[in-house]
Amino acid sequence: MSMLKRVLAVVAAVNGFAAPVYAQTGYPSKPLRYIVPYGPGGLVDTSARSLGQYFQDKMGQPVVIENRPGAGQAIGLELAAKAVPDGYTIVTANEAGLVFLTALRKSLPYDPLKDFAPIGTMFSSSFFLIVHPSLPVSTVQELIAYAKAHPGKLSFGSVGLGSSQHLAMELFMMKTGTEMVHVPYKAASASMADLLAGRTQVMFEGPGSLPHIRSSKLRGLATSSLKRSPSMPQLPTLAEAGVPGYEMSTWIGIATQASVPSPIIDRLNRELGEWLRLPATRDKLAAQSLDPMPGTPEDMAELIRSQIPMWAKVMRAAGIEPE
Image (cartoon, rainbow, N blue to C red; front, side):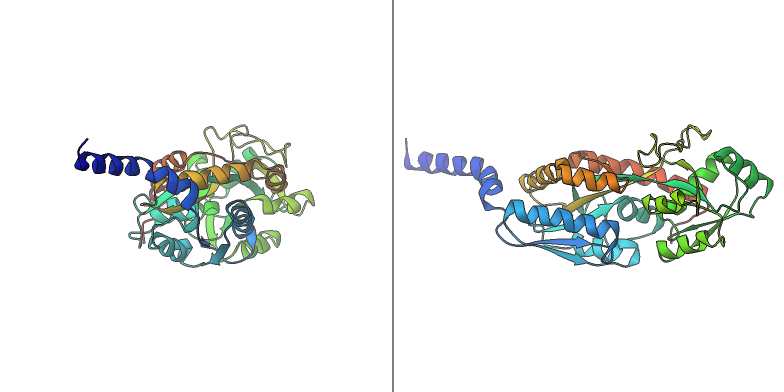
């Protein structure tokens, strides 16, 4: 064999084995940056810190949590999208930031489909349809009848225009032919305080509403997912309660930059799946009425692709135009 052929053979062998060797032994070799586009505290932040600690323990490198709230998650997501695509920056990526915000804004400083590489989903959460006890309704059908008899008289709170709670109610009104007034708040605590005080009458809210339902400070009517909640099994789903086809749940996952090598993404997805299988993780999620949602990067990418046009359609039908 000529010297040239020998050199070419060695180059081909090195190229063929470079990616798997890099994935197995070269990563990670320095600390990871984990951007959370929310403030400290709360479900999203605490779940990120739990997963970050697991990554740190398993991969032998520090994981630095960086809270970057603001602009409906756009600040944190832009920061992540423009980071060096070396696999050392990951970001909390959820339905609100990558789907709802995309349908709500005319332009964003990032493209949710082109600038991010999904790593995988973590968990999903459904909502509870709740009312103030002073409202003379005990079932979903009674709420629908009351709302139709008093169009525009009932008000519902949310954490802002285009938020999960807002869109859950818009979908409900579309499917039931009812009309209620949206009252947006800057924080979930404020929207809940006004519902408890009776200043608003109806709301979709997550597991944080369970203590108030159990104490009878609020009345639960139904759950928004396709199956009943183990935390409140006596409540029917909205589909069971007479709103066919209604389904609304939110999901949370993690992502990195679009051009990060696939072996690194696969490694992070594998570690995420192992974290979700831990009994301690599953017990913690169950205690918060959250459903583990393991899946592939491709599953998460398809979720984002399919949901953007679906929720944009709901927003346009509700008269919500891009800002």
